[in-house]
Image (cartoon, rainbow over all chains, first blue to last red; front, side):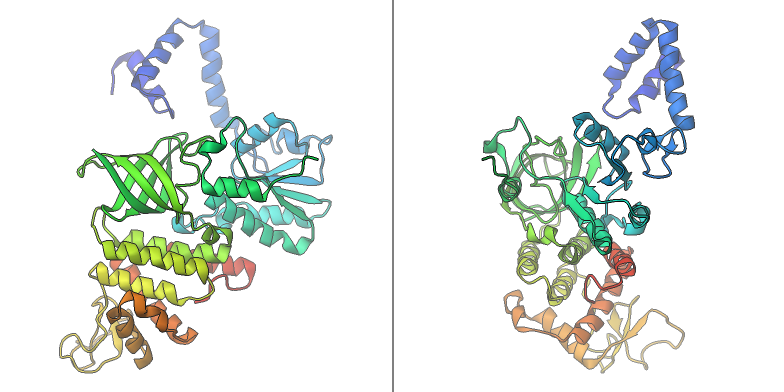
Length: 198
Length: 256
């Protein structure tokens, strides 16, 4: 523990992920030289997010009101739901600008070895959303790892009785990557999921 | 020091933004926990090699006394992908990993157990519908961990007995046991006792010849699970997970 106001700030900054002692020190001295209003804006943004952030009552995205911006936007396609594990995944999909439907955040993934059972995720809430009708497709965009795969499979099983289209995001090689470094599983998945270009 | 060995991925735990702490059961070092830098990034060179069940050739840096060696390479020898393609198989195979994690201490080298674990995963990979391999593996794991229950007769007077006392880890006859109310006891059939003794004594390579009935398998499996839970002082999470999935789906995902 460091003493003094600068020391306190350095200690506080080191608690952030990816910030070591040296980076924290650099940031602390940068904050010291910043205009007062800028520093206050950062501080109030942190306080706001802690005081006002809550989960959207419909999709469990992070929001400051009852429903999030995406759920309350009527111009979006109301018949498609993209299922993700964490709210941060929504930002990544939104950045791609190819999906204009709604989302549903599960707030985690199934893991028998960690004791994460289906009732600890927002799967029942998804089932209820689909049961209300007017949903034609559910896209499962959970992580392409074992836990994400099992979660997707479980959700697909839960949604089977509704007779709607349930799809899984594609598997394969990342753009900008090199085939030479692909592992067996990724390569086999990308070959299985190949697409005709003619 | 650079260590090269073969290993099976048991579990991984996220650390920081994209790092992982991976628990691997290795051939030459027993159970080791290693630090892997950035495997969660899409362009990571580790690819899918750090997913559970993957059988890899691994290289890690660190001496024996190093608490968290650094994993620098993992090349897949066999991915056991089919165990991850199906929820039923996944739960069943995860049970194997969980009991290994619960009973094996770190850095205890048991090469026979490594080969048995590898072979069990191969068996589940090819015949996931049968339940016997989980039972066989658990009994062999208990044997190599020095925690195998004693069922061949009363542990005190060696006379015949069929009541297994969980906290004693053995069968004790009514004459030898001090009278009282012991809720943690299980009455076993003679068939279950015989099956257990056979599995314990027989060589792993010959166990494919044993095909117990579902009832017998279930009876012995239940006793073994309770014994493992008591000895490891942890509940079996996969068992609870299976129960919860059954509740929602309305049908058994894994048979007993």
